Length: 340
Image 1 (cartoon, one colour):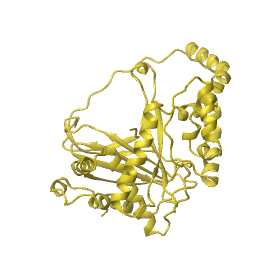
Image 2 (cartoon, helix red, strand yellow; image 1 turned 120 degrees about the vertical axis):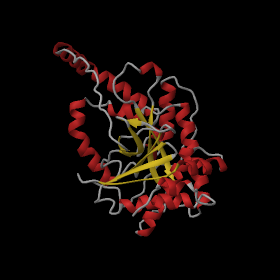
Image 3 (cartoon, helix red, strand yellow; image 1 turned 60 degrees about the vertical axis):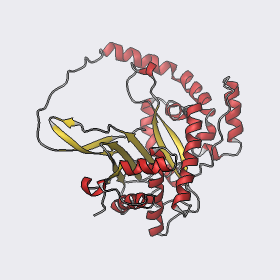
């Protein structure tokens, strides 16, 4: 899964080393490349529309349009893709306090839970560690919303970023990211039933993604030239956040090394990730990074949309406690997550 930047917690001081620079492209080469790109953009935009139509039933908002599944199937047939896609559940995002226009202010909460406990829960339920992480986030969000009498009757909808860079694309510059869209059963009361429901919905999303990795995110971004995109995207996102939010939030889980790392001679004790917010994706982003036996969380929120980001962090540990038989003794030694 993909994430944004991160903050590393380290020990003693060490030596700093530099990196070699890369030669910049020439002015003539950049101008000629931009000219060719501009002339051929209409053709590429039309191709992007056709390709995106094949994933219409997996695109937020578009999937709720009547007949979207039939249109997607017809588009795939026209493109010569006859493979059957596993059906997806409804992807209509309900209204929540953290959906709507966001400000330029941010709040950050960070902490850790035991990755060993998460893996133990995953093994005992024949699930993946990522599924348990999604279940913890589901429970934490449910608890936060219940405290404010703002829990919707429908499941929340989360976007889960996924890196889709292939081995053949190593020479291409930049990230290649897509997203799985999955419901979070926040409307399920029992923790065990909620865990099973998360496993079922994530399995359905992963089966669909494995069969046909969703390219619609990149295709939609390619419809307009970059200068135009930079101008109109903020206005479109703000309008969508008010009229009909496509998703409720982004949740990202990044697998990391299960051994200690060192930065400039100092041991990295924790790695707290930080990611981005937008009007269209909601005023809260949950990102976690598994490292050296711990699962480090970084929650970024707009204070106008989420008034107590540390409260949500505390609910994550409570969610894990509901799923384990007894606390892991490793928790006290490691200084695990606390909302204090």
